[in-house]
Length: 468
Image (cartoon, rainbow, N blue to C red; front, top):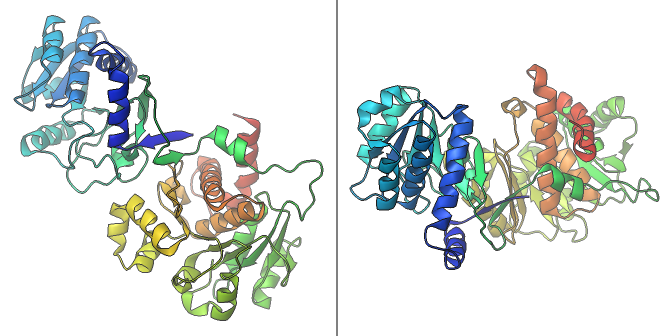
């Protein structure tokens, strides 16, 4: 699991560790890791032209000490001071090592620029003088390596309400911060390289699954398993207007761990499902979970039947697409909703662009206000539970943005719920495997929803057996 923490949690852990170590030890650890990461990024050190943008914070000190290490290895290192107050010890170390203080004129010949302007305690946005330097770097096409976090982003929310640095690489220390995992700030970070400095941390605010977690959580059948013990999923999806949604959602469900799928819906849609998946059982019956709404407009939701479903305390329900608008606030079932930003905005009465700008905030708000688990789809999918459990899935490909992709996800998620996983784990696993399948399917270019579903067994096998 990848863990991400708030600024307060990180600073508390740093303070506890610094109390046990000689002064400056943590900064030296960070600077060493940063220097190595920059050398690896460039592919060389000797002869490289490195420019440091230095503010008043400790990450400016990290950058200066890293610059000193690079200078001693033969790099030409220049510091541009963005503040009247800089880390005195770091600046002295840089000058002793052969670095120098320069101006914006030095940016033109830079191979890389280190962003040490604002640390994790900074507010969103950049001061005009710092912004002018960053814009100049961008215009000249010089890659930026952010020190800890890109200056100007909101570290605790992943939001970017003001101007900020867009990094080619972010080198962070001790642990990931929330902005490293949550968009739109995660995109501004680029790839994130973590340098271990020995922090001891509490439970994480935000977590992100890794391949080992998928292997640990996946409900692999055993020798005594049968189709009922593996779980039965009920699908109330598709409509005469969108019959394909039922076929696609069923394909997603059957590519998961579930033992049986029941379809309930219009007879013409049932015929379309059976034509592709003859193993599906049509008609009502006992199930361990329901997936409802994919391919059904809000106006087409059977309100009476839907209300009965969401009042069943012992059967979890996935609410997708048109059914999200019919949800309301009164229910007894354990519910997972799977909106995109527009659907979540409609549920909360918030414009779509505001949801996109504050994805973590609004996913958590909806989870708490409606007492549901929220799987907010997007480039980084967010899973938020009423109890505060939050998972982020940064594994994705833009090719997943195709019609019916969400129907595959709803069916797959239903499969995990029916197999007995709790809502948060089921949603996190489904998001991870859906993205993995999309990545696998898109290796040759554009994909369709059905190609995502068809890639799910192979993606699952790769993860469970550690195939490369």
